[in-house]
Image 1 (cartoon, rainbow, N blue to C red):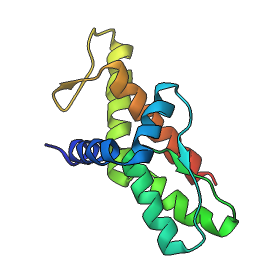
Image 2: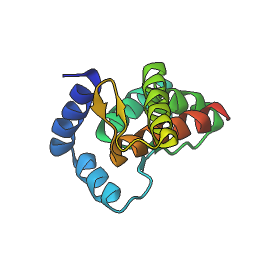
Image 3: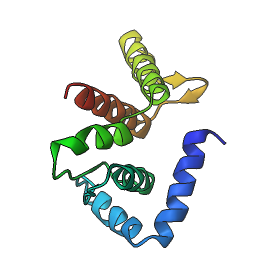
Image 4: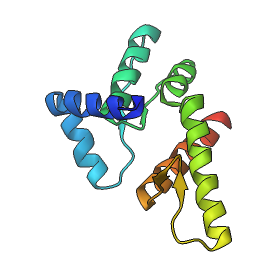
Length: 131
């Protein structure tokens, strides 16, 4: 099982038991941005951000500019996630450009959900990097 699959499985397990996990499911089902509250100490904020990300939140509300670096670091896609997302989008676009019927990456088919998630990761990476 890949690390991202293990992380998603762990998040589902935590989310099923955590009250905020149920809230994330409800918000996500309506395609709304999932953000949780704020903290005043950096260590507590970092921990809260990592838990929130594992539960499926997209971000955290900041009440002070000093919190932005911590929040952006926690919710930024890793270098590996960005590399993989770029590879998926590139493979898909090459397939479309050549008129082939099905796109693959590392021997696996790229479906609409894979492509949407890859583009979301890249957009989040660009958005956070631009700030």
